[in-house]
Length: 587
Image (cartoon, rainbow, N blue to C red; front, side):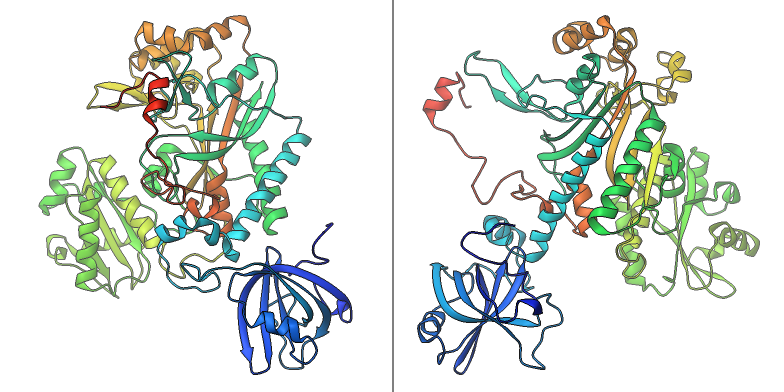
């Protein structure tokens, strides 16, 4: 690496450099005054080096060093020396040496920062985001940015070797219904008309397949105006993939090899391929979630048949209404206090349940306020069905299937965060396949796409489109990593007639179809190849690979949960002149 103002980085010096004259540049990370000597830990992106200022050998440099504070930017020239015996820092790659300063140049002085860069003090996220340029100086965020860069580089090299072309698609495009609210951009030249920022390049990448590109990839920005959470941002980054003459197995093989390569080269972690697959119905039935975390057990067990005719009214009424009774066994949690159990019940109710039944597994009995409603034989059968052992806590929910899955899935995830349950740096991938093509929106009294309207139904289910649409499975698939959906894709529709049938199923009027999708359907009339694709959420992947809790920690300048930037103060009002030019009036 060629350097100009400096000869080395702050993470570079080793014992082999002892006796050499070098120049380092960086930020004052920490300053310590030990009587006559002043020690400074100098930091740059590559690491830390200890610099020592001696008033006897470099009086002027020592005098300047007395005025330094944390985060001042300096250049130091001096001689590399060995640290005195017993003062080495084995935690630092540079910990065997120090730079004995001969001269010091102060390049920029710093005020006292709003929070410590070096410390682990609890700092509110709002304060960190307001001063994001300071927050990004912290080593853990520098590491996240570096990992993100390496993932992107490995991805581009991998797809280049697989014959893919990286092609940019428009940022200003047409508003089309794809599941989330669009960000709109008013047109100055056509007053009253708007561009939309793309929720994904979905239509464009399919049109690239029609155009004969055959293998497309893009690391692209996408935009969705939706409610935010830890793994959502209004603007996010996808690794977008599309292949002609390809099906599910082709996509699975391509992506699995990419993941194995990225984890090996970036983290040094071996990932076993192929990844396991499970159907959407199986994922819900076993784990209560379509993105199950498979690093731990606690599978949902169906005990409905065991409890049919039960004298316990809650279970009996749920079963009579066509519902289910399912449970999970939580390892080693039989010692939960009554308050903890009440908190769990409140959590279950908050998630949609009418209540929560619990049993503590003792050596020979199941202990619970409701145990009296069941025979010893039934209690023994329940314990066996759950595979529970002494010291476990069994939790049951009785309700409609959708509620049972949602509540037990949430409880399972809650206990999955128990310290020590999952080993650090454990990565478990799985595919979830065969999602339903559509769901029914009771409020709007219409069907909605489970993924998006361009997903192909399973060929054998196409005859059911008009007669039993809720039974139609789609050729879609999600890639799950540690309970987080990191990729989603499908085999696409490439036939105009079938695509039109799907639009009609979704209750889109003919004029809407023509106005919003006419150009897309027309393209299919000129020879469209079968094609399939997938989009990988780059932000989520980096979050999981770096062990962060939020994608905000792996995006350089993220938005808050209210979709605002505290650093720049955006979104913000614009001038009346700008609005007038756009022919827009505010109400």
